[in-house]
Image (cartoon, rainbow, N blue to C red; front, side, top):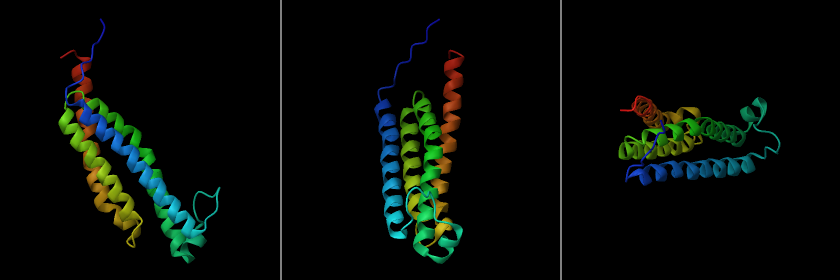
Length: 150
């Protein structure tokens, strides 16, 4: 039996929230590039060495930016996937949570690359983490509802 999905009228908000993650990725890339330039860590080196980061605050900050960006890239696919699935059943709530996830990831970036270093990422991690967990549970419920034909 074929499955027909009808997108809710407000699904455009879900797509807007998903799109916001592309711009957050751009912010990560820009911040990392700026801090790479300041640290003078040459390509193809992904990070400053431990010794270099211990001696040079700019190299340490670059490493923080690089790690924040890598963490973003590691988490974006599952967050956007959960957002798109959850949005089929809970479009407005999912869009709000998706926007919160993006906002949290930007806070994470700027906190991580602040003078606080890794400790500065905590508030952004909390916002993004809570939104992510909620989206994943909503996606699981939506998947169940669709799979069971309810």
